[in-house]
Image (cartoon, rainbow, N blue to C red):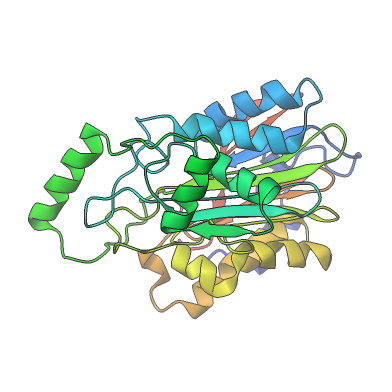
Length: 321
């Protein structure tokens, strides 16, 4: 088992340590690195490229994360986010998203149908209502009132996959460590503003009505303007039970680095869940100085980084052998 303790021991003992060889943690301690954007999974590079168009011209982190994740929401080849997302067990695509700005404001939608870009609706909830979250038909009504168009977001490919699943699957959600169901993004702009966004179509073939961690402030995403931000991906139920992203940021507040905070949050899940080997959880964190951390329960979680020096994808360290 690869624990935080032996990770730190390995880092100190080896001149070629895992931490120092990680391109996201090079050159730390030399001042604030900004702007910078990080996002979950390999497909995050496409989202980062759009976000960087905004950050590179000294734009606002909030605009960058919204526009960045919208690239993946519109990508029909990605069957875990937005248009083309796999449906629930009843064949309905329901979307969840949340967003936070550099002042700690937040907006969220959950169980939203028929709208291509739930992250944009979440931002309008934040900026145009006194609320944080809208759900289901209420979220749809609000979106339509703001000019969004009702669409069929169940693609032919997703429908065919669902019909194939129905022939042999049990009539309940099936947890698979490869069910990568979220894009989350954190950005630090040139003015020092932090923002985050998270959007998903949720667990494939879930029970109708299921909502995971992605739209829950403090679970799937949390940004503290004074400390940093964190986001989660993987099995939402485990993240929700530990309020994972808030936990990561609070650990950073207590002095942990983003890397150490992500590791401790994953370890907490590993120790409390009965069968952690049957799930995947990944955390991504960004500190106020541009330092990045990431850690997952199992091998396979990747994240993408873009700053003034590089655009790269990195495999996160992980807990279970």
